Length: 442
Ligand SMILES: Cc1ncc(COP(=O)(O)O)c(C=O)c1O
Image (cartoon, rainbow, N blue to C red; front, side):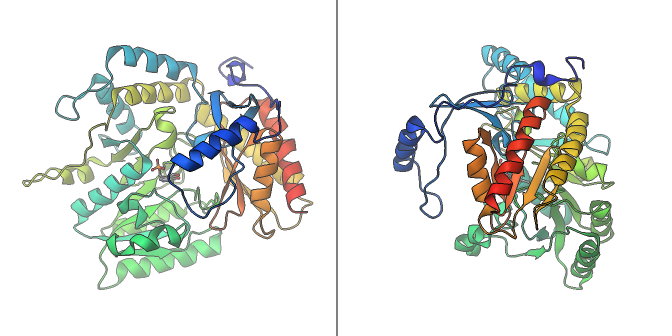
């Protein structure tokens, strides 16, 4: 293989090397300090976490000197690997030159270049871009754009979906009602949740339900917000053609289709944009996570005629002090270049399909376990085995592999390595994942 096809020749292609059982003493000490100083989140529980010290490519090293293979990639964000050389270079050059500009009053050249590149990703010509810092920002901007364009405040979202925790996206968070409930009185009350389709029959029922909601006389639905593959909800892939049909329905009823490609996009799920690959023509596309190459950056990319809704006689704006930070725009440009130059989107599709097949074959003998996904975004559903996914993730850490859980009851082992992961790392990971799953289901 040429060096372009095999990013494993980049640094960070090593197998795990543990010098102490994780979490080691230094991680435990740091985490005690973290527990004291950082706000508590959720129920009190032992985290068993490690503390990251350095990371390169698909390798992470903790403060105890353990080296891991990263199958989580910062919740999918380290798309081109930790500290990709081109990203580091772009960061260094930009930080020498300009750290901060002046929003849209006097923007940086880096931001302008990035907007042009992102606009070209939209299936319609002449799309326009609004940048933010988090995925939550991009979804908030999309929801606001939909209201401005349609004058309708209703939203259809999915049970199990996650779009971030700002007040806009939180109102459409179907993952865990407990995330919404304390704030319910301050959230958009016009959100209707429908099931996320995991099979053809379910898709027909969901589309029927959406058609009914959109067609109702009193319908105030201006947007359908959807993850093209349910990410945090447990890596659920809708049947082919579902997203295209969803878009068709939305447009028939004067609503917009918002594709939240924050996790799936830019190659993660084996396509530049999963929704477009499935035949949909989303009006608004949200990007984030891997976009900044490790720096916080998100974007809303929208059809020109829709984004035009921001042009109003009475000023309405969507901005923030650090939106379009030059350093993040520079690393995003380097990330987009690396994705194209190293053919990482195609690599994700090819390696992901082979990995899924391999894991499914190896786990075929284990009862009530399902492997699913798209590109390098895989989930192993252990929902029939209570507590098994968490146990498998803990066991993986002890074998030197970092993974996370997903799903409403954290019943799915989620595998989203960097798209640059070396084939040897992936091969070794397969053995570890299969052993960890077998052990955890007893
Ligand atoms: C599909 C999707 N949308 C939005 C978000 C929110 O992104 P952020 O955490 O950057 O606000 C996430 C985060 O996991 C996500 O998976």
